[in-house]
Image (tube, rainbow, N blue to C red):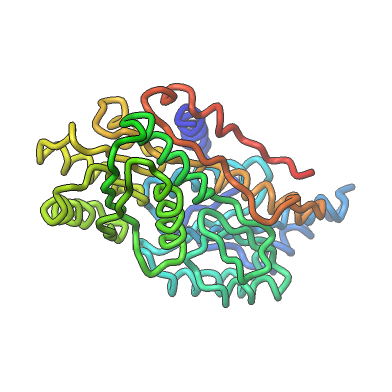
Length: 346
């Protein structure tokens, strides 16, 4: 996947013009798009469907505008927009803010966007408003089950817990007593509780015994994550499995473990396949990371919206696993094979 993303990034940097606008560009209005389409189609043999395709405008409301893992989704989104000839706007808050995400969706509705992609931290209200207005919405990473979204495309939290547990047993055996600590981005979001509950359920079957001794928050900030892990190991020295469910938390935890000289006592796991996280796995400073295709959160999501609008196609299921796997030293060089792009709907 990293090779694919790097190649795509190089291609986009080399191109001077693409169909996707940057976050600082002013989106075109519907009237302007209609006027441009009318001018381009006058005196030509274009069909109404071809003209409609040229007019499509997608808005991607990300939970974090410039977070490294979400920039991977941005690359996929921009690549898909370029291939499809769609105007794409990538927007979002600099720091997690459901309120700002709500406002950005309201703006997309006011601009009469043709489709919206967003993440489940945004409240259901503005999403429902968009859907009621005839705008299909595709949700990635964290679901919004109260909204009649086109589809949810994200990580399977139960599978995430299973692959984490299986890796712990593989490394330490069934008799190893697990004293775990979990760090999430924020505890005031349902996704965090869903992930924690899945870990409790799966790990509770461990023959050697399981105890979840502490839960902390990173607030999507690496310095905050580092401080929380320092406090965790000071207050709970028995912790021997550190599970990080936020992208910045894995590297932060790994550094704390090394600094304290307890690497041989603690298994450290992260999420997402950022370059820093993968480098730490190669160095043996992090035992694994659970990942899915953030690139496809942008690329495949845009294609699914496009196919729905232009061909009326829908995913066979509303809830779709984006491909949840754990990356370790054993599969780090070929794990991307399990995350290959699939864009066609049946």
